[in-house]
Amino acid sequence: YMSQSSQGVLAASLNDAWSTLAAIAIRVGGDPGYPGLEGPQATPEARAPKILIVLETPGWAIASEQARAAFEGAKTRLAQAGVKLMTRRERPEIDAFEHMLMRALPLTRLINAWESLWPLNTYADRDASKLSAVMRERAIEGRQLKIGDYRSALAERASIRAAFASLAQIGEACVTLSAPGPAPLGLTSTGDPSFAIAASVLGAPALSLPMLQDSGLPLGLQVLGFDGADADVFAIGASVQGM
Image 1: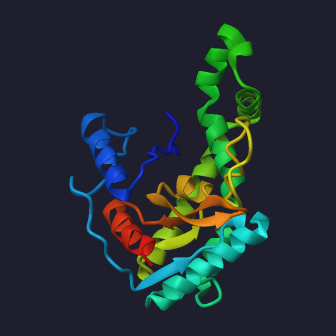
Image 2: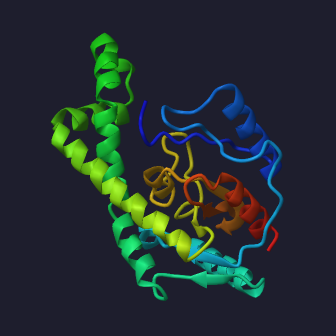
């Protein structure tokens, strides 16, 4: 029901991931207005990219030293493999987009809070004790919003998506970290979403490739593609994973 709903799979390989996602798209469909995975039924063949865009996203400021070092190492391997990397320092369009992304998390919270208002109020009326603390907090946030706030948020998101779409003229996909560090201990939290939230705001296909490490624990390299470019993301991801 939420316009930033992000569905994905955890898989042992890119082939398993594509096969599962294709099966879901064929049998189940997608969220309203979104047909699901776009591309052939067979897993796309690996394709080496010529130009990739490096994104810091809001997560870079809180990324651990080891996570940053691991990402820099990945960039070095990509460059050595012949991939040209474009950053905010080379192109003002990328820098402008990075600045827009700084609003991704609060924007997402606002949109999700408003779009969750009806179901959460219904659940709360039935038995508020069954809602988690996070969901109770979201319901409170939603009740404090006005429809004008939601309209403004949608307009801002549209501007961010338009800026991102224009980056397709610079590179074939984007790379960044999947998280600012290793997964946290316990089951109370899945960790800080600062790196992951960009794909949700953009409605863009993204892969988290288990190529990096932080403190001896796995850390993902994220490949972020453009709207409708699911097959390209997988083809590029398969190549990047082998670099």
